[in-house]
Image 1 (tube, helix red, strand yellow):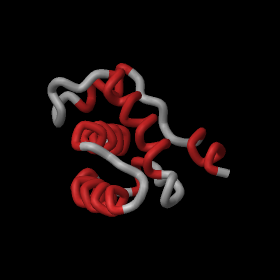
Image 2 (cartoon, one colour; image 1 turned 180 degrees about the horizontal axis):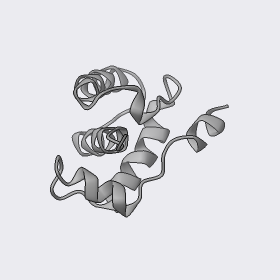
Image 3 (cartoon, helix red, strand yellow; image 1 turned 45 degrees about the horizontal axis):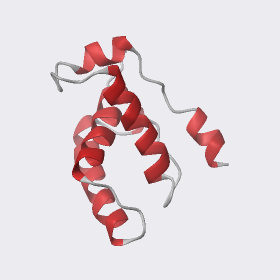
Length: 98
């Protein structure tokens, strides 16, 4: 079931990285891709995946640190670099043109 949810999560492209540079000037497609993988691997240990568009950038800036604290109290460990990549992925991929 987790595999099905993960397959519906957006795959980053260069256009996504270019758009995200306004918030994260040094961001690359590789960073976004790593953030996606970490999101899929780390966050599914406790719950299903949410689409990046399900929350605003401001909300993700609150949610990700809180979830990291919760994960680190359990068996899943997320270091500060991983947290940053997950957050950048969610914010970048949630900021889609309308």
